[in-house]
Length: 193
Image 1 (cartoon, helix red, strand yellow):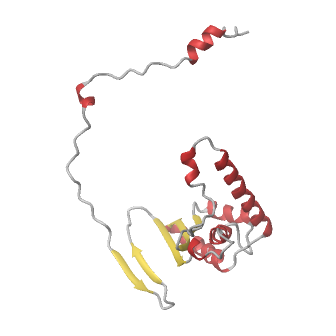
Image 2 (image 1 turned 180 degrees about the vertical axis):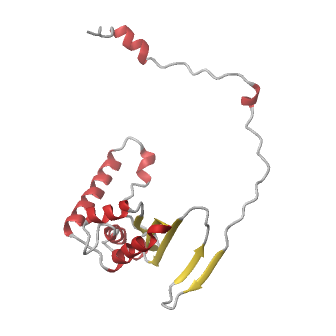
Image 3 (image 1 turned 60 degrees about the horizontal axis):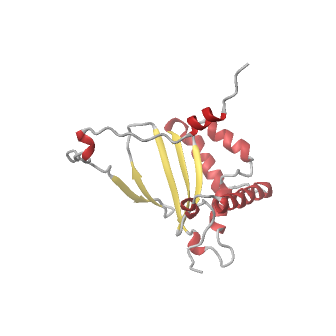
């Protein structure tokens, strides 16, 4: 059987400790900057597909990864009055599943290949992102196409997402840290009120 702490022992442990900083000479001034290192951006190959889609291709073959960002004009700037956040909700709903795959099957298929597909909405654009190992690109790209062309848009997914966003707003409003209130990941509008 362990002996419970006496109140004085708890108070001694919980008391703030004095901060002690050594007086070494190097601490009296910030470190000097090192010599500039060369920085070279990889070349960007810009071209247009027959469908009119503009492509900006950056190739780096250090890792066997493929990343893609399919970007469209849109975003919060074109949300209809009274429906602020519509673009954000729509883009988030795209990755909740497809007509053939519910949310869990969709996520499992991506996890099986260590891939990801995401949707986003900014102030003036919306888009889908893809990240995949090169060996799994065909399967992941097919899922991206299905995500864009045959989204599930299930009511249960929509209700869950809206509830999650409402809870996020509530949590942000009740936070004791005002600095965190600036961005809660919730829908917003660029229009002034």
